[in-house]
Image 1 (tube, rainbow, N blue to C red):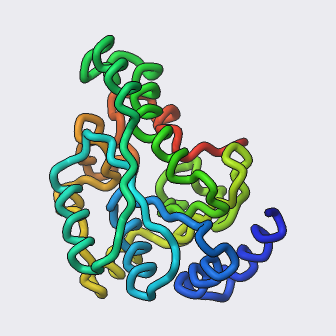
Image 2 (spheres, one colour; image 1 turned 45 degrees about the horizontal axis):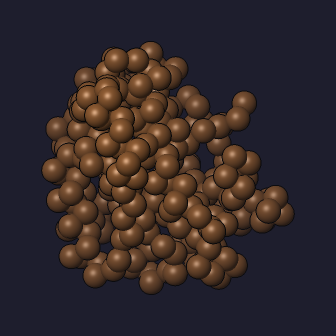
Length: 235
């Protein structure tokens, strides 16, 4: 896999994201998946895939705690592109056991309880979405957090034994916004209300001017602990 990582990182220096995604679909037919949470970055990637009829699966993780605005942009995306978005839900038995024992807001109790909730609602469904896949495409950008500034567009994810493609890693927030506007792509209306990174409703708030990009996620926790387990990076 490392040879493909090196090959694609070299390709990324000169080719558009459309060409790169087309190359991925050609090299790994039926083995590439893009996971979307319907944020601005993800909507850009969805637009590129669907508008160019690129053969890459688009999938989403429905935690059961999403904002109604997120479901609305999900529906608008289906209406615009007339394409399928695969949905992965949490395991009923795991979710029922956790909520029955700890209640619907256990994630406020401790970092451990919050990570348990994230694991059941997001990480485990992701594992099913990535099953038998060779490449996972994400909307991660370097600007989003200090942990993400050292990432390359293509990396080998040892934990999941696949290639991870951060196709917009070098894009700025302004570039993302301009692309959305230019192509009239549906987007989450919460972005117009100070919500930058949008996750589950109980765990997301708008950020204030000058606050970090991730300040609105799990705002009651220390900044250094603000990952849900989907994107883990070895030091």
